[in-house]
Length: 511
Picture (cartoon, rainbow, N blue to C red):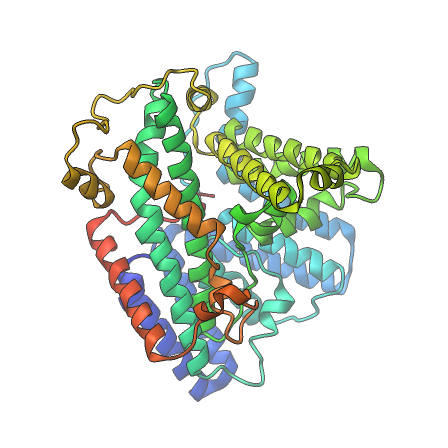
């Protein structure tokens, strides 16, 4: 079941909320937790009922391992638990990738039956690993299966994160005091959800057909011209940005409706002025997990610069592989690892301070912003392409190596296009009517949004997380009639897009 579907918005969510708060009035926290577990299992089973057995089975196995670790903190039990979780992930996600590559090395022909990737397995696997490590370190001492099951299955973060730890989440499910509906929580949660829905279906899903068409062209071994290549990169770069930003807002909003605060997972990453800063803003909880459970155990920054750079590269290679079983993802992670290493070297040699003093702070910051943005955009080509050859067709197009013309026969050029066609191209995303001037205007507008405007957390800073910068103070959300009208308008626009466009899953649901 998708957050951006009619059955979720108008059936599942209202029933889940009403049942949750009614349960709190009758039997307190126990019945509320039971309700949220049942609702979350229904939510998960809606995708494919058979995989609910995998979710519940792995949940029970990890709970038993956790109980054993609480009794006897043997490292062997922890290693066995991590191995179990990694093995399940490897079987479903990497089995074909591993066998195919070994077969290619041995020059063998092997037919591998395709397995359906269980939804959210990458996320709840990491969450279970974090739980076992927290138990081993003595951070978790609770023995309640009910509370553990609620921790794993809580549907706002089950499918695509954020990756949470047991104590910060379950502390909010107070066993002595059930949650009651609060107007502030509901108002903030609904507004977060509506903003995220508008980002997802109003922006990301409208850009998706163009990105799909252009990357499909490259995947079909057709080189893209200069304008097409840049259009492919920018439309996908903005699509995945607003897709994941929208999901993160909706997850926070959904949890807040239940009175639960999830950690921040997305913080305007295209405003980053370095790759280091980018990874502190993009998928924050995944970056934190990789830092705590891969980078630091490999040595981190405590054993010299050389080891630190090697640890960075290995961490990002594994992070790339986590995103998908394809060499394009591994190389994408490796590229970001190299960029992070260069960034650390740049800072270690004090070149950043020298450059800033020579150029001046405003010019230096603008240059860093542009360089980071372009590096991330170029790396997205590897992330999105199905093969290295397809990525090469686009990357070479970015520098004009494939010419400046159009490879697609139905690509509409600017000359001779009536004005109404230009306007039409803004709305009819199912037909290939976009033209360079329209694409340029759209991308410029989206650049203004991601570089200048406040993000969702800043807008929703009313008793929430962050202060709004002074020049955008007027944009701070308040529970008043004006913001109610804005929410209604965004919701109506989102529903209109959902009617006109195909319902698309979130990009990170595939991981």
